[in-house]
Image (cartoon, rainbow, N blue to C red; front, side, top):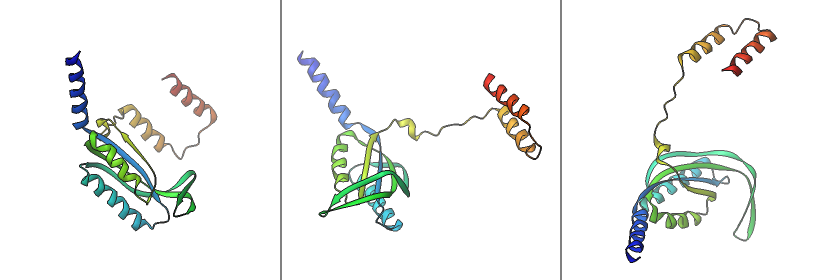
Length: 165
């Protein structure tokens, strides 16, 4: 019984020291200019690195319309947001440091909302897209016939062929 508990505690310690891959997706306040939003984004990257993270991939913040209005209380007043700058950072860090990192991000006054998730390492591996030669030829033929008129019977026949495959 004692040996089993010590093995479990060792496994827990090893898990906490293991580097894992995380993605931080966050909305930066739209009240900032694009240059200011980019600067705050870079500050967030530096914060991750100072806390032991290694940036693997990043997407600079882009202006986005929000799906719904977000209300934020701050400095004694309510602010409503319909848009933001959205950016994301994929990084590797010891799992034991992630809670502290999350607490620090919550304190950033320029972050409207954020989501921090663990992602599989496969996210970083390039995906090979294989397009069969037959599909390439179909696309080529379709673009060559672009100027010729198409009747309903031809369209129906093409749909039937696709459904059968």
